[in-house]
Image 1: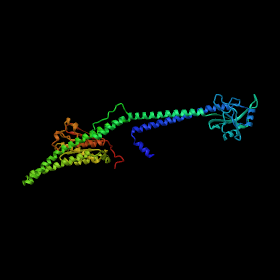
Image 2: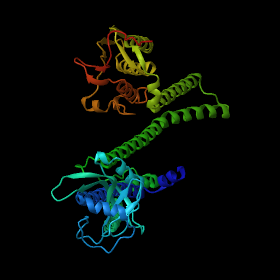
Image 3: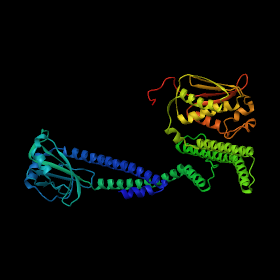
Image 4: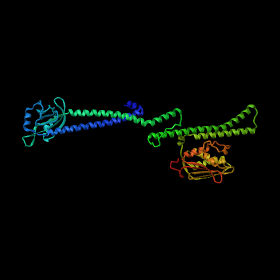
Length: 491
């Protein structure tokens, strides 16, 4: 059985659908055919039983019954109509009496003798109940007949009342040859019709499977093409009015390929931008190291001031490279890795930690802070890095001796500096990767800080914006969903 199931599952979907449709139709047709055959059989037997009951209900003359029982002939005489009963209009019929001991007394007008059974003698013994029995039997020649055995009713004379004749029962029967022929013909017709229906259902199932699976074939071809050529620009045409499963699958596939294409494009852009950003510090490092190496090889040492400046430049370039590599690693971290570390954290504590780092980087600045309690669901390390990036921008662009105002109120964190501000035409690009304002290219940075901020805040379910502040400077606004009190699951 398991081997059959495995072979069936190994078949193509079209073949399986066709076989399933054919099997379902075959089952339905078989059920209808069998039911129809049994209904027709029941109706034909009801008709025979009605004729048998009508004939057996005729009373027999007392003298005729006594004479028949006394002579008890076993071989029937040539058939002709008599007062003993019969089925006029039929080719043959059977009439006989059955004694209590099972002896059969065949009428001279009977077409033959019907084999007696214990059921017939039971009718004789229970004649007082007046009940008869219907059964299928055979005659002396082995032919099938329909039999009715009833208690024997006799008339003592013309106009006299009927009475039971003790010790005998009347058996009447008709041959089943014509009935069986009708049923056999019906079975043959039903078998032929069922076969044609099953074959037609199989063909229709195959046609329906082909039509229904055509979109799947197109999807398969596109998937194979993408796997073979890695061309993500290919899409599956889908009718906008269709809402079936195949249409949904096609739309999902188109969305997936579009997302993959966008991801590949962003990846390529990230690689290109990263290569461009890495080239500058690496070139500067190479130049400075070559100068130091040449000085050592030629035996002409550099002036102490120049050597100190070169080493300071190397250190600055190394710091910039480390910062850039750290930012790239932050951007490349998988979403699943981030989700594993998400927890409920106090935002005011995260901002306090970021403020301590910002004050170290801008000791000449005045940084004010007004923080209210607010609890959010986020990754603590990533969220602190994002807030540090926001504060770093404020510190970087603040004038010497300037002020940076930090406010946390009901989940809204605002960082306001009093620097030159961002031109209006540059605001749409501030969160792009590696984008740097032309006026800030001389300042340290990789151009990834605000991109990391936007990504981290978005993953925490919030939003971040940058805008020009009234009176000059820039205001960064970070909105994060949360609550002013710690939920029960706070670690």
